[in-house]
Structure formats: C-alpha cells, structure tokens
Image (cartoon, rainbow, N blue to C red; front, side):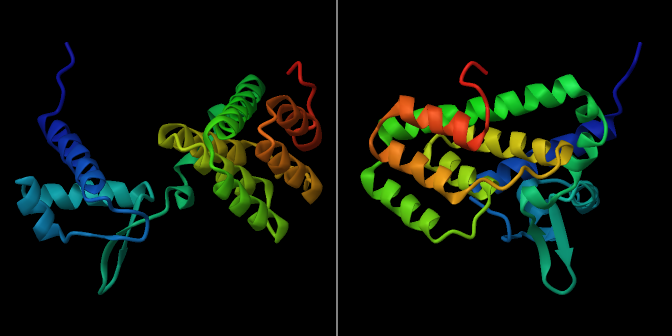
Length: 209
C-alpha cells in the first residue's frame, strides 16, 4: 500500500491557497504578491512552508523574485512549462494535428459568438487596430478570443495556442487583406462569409476540415 507524504499534502495545500488568494485579490501579471511574512499570516502556515511553495512556483516560471523589490507574477506566456511539454508528447504527429484542429475550432466558435453578440463599436475598434497593420496572426486571434467575451474559452485558446507555438514552426505571414475581410464579414454579421474567409484565406484549409 502506498502512503502519501504528509509534507507533500501541506505543500500542495499551500500552493492551492496561493492560487486562490491571487485570484481573489485580482492580481495580474506584473503585480507584486504579498511578502513571505504576510503570506504566512494570511494563509495561517509556517514561513518555511510558504518559502518552499514560492520556490516551486518560481521554478515553474509562474512568479519571479526581484532583488530589493519583492515577488511578482509573471505573464503565463513567458514561462517555459509549455515548451518543456512540447518537447515530449507534442512531438506525436497525431497530437499535433489534433492540437491545430482544436485551435481552429475554438477560433471559429469565437467568430460565431462575435457575430451574434459583439457590439458594432467593438468591431470598429478592431477594424481600426487591424488597419494600422504591424500585427501577426497570433495577435489578431488573441483579439478575437478577447472579443468572444467568454473568459474560459479565451483562456483555453491561450493555452492551446502556446502548445501550438511549442510544437510548430511559425506560420507563413497572411496578407493583411484576409484579416480585414474577416472583420468586414463580422460587421456584416455574415457567418458563412466569415467561415469561408477564415478557412480559405487565413487558414488555407477546405471548409470540409
């Protein structure tokens, strides 16, 4: 019979409490988290246990300690965990194919939601942003994911996109016209047109995919 290590249970509990505290306080990447002493008091645990939990989060690249300043939350896209995972199981061609298919399905679902619910003012802002050029495919679809207004779906897209970047070479640049045409289709609330532009002009796929 395998027995769990009590110290591991305490450590995992502290990590979970830290995560809940960060969410409850509304902390974002770049924000400073409370000091080790403050955390120990708030979580009602020993400082040594807090120190170990913070060290683990720092090793994962989720937080960073700046000498003389404190400990800060890092942008999740900066940490290397996704890249490490990509070096292993994402080398499987079938998984890579499933990954891209999932990414495309999420993007198309975001497009459908935007057509149904996004305000004209927000689409005008998106069009103005796109017309200024200087963006890449990832930046564009990050905007699309944000406009979808479903925060869970946006977060899933970010994770899937990070995995895709870890396992695929950068995609060939898409002409600006394709993105502009997609936004125009969104403004027209024309789902069939938007779907065709997305698959044919941007993803270079058959609509049967």
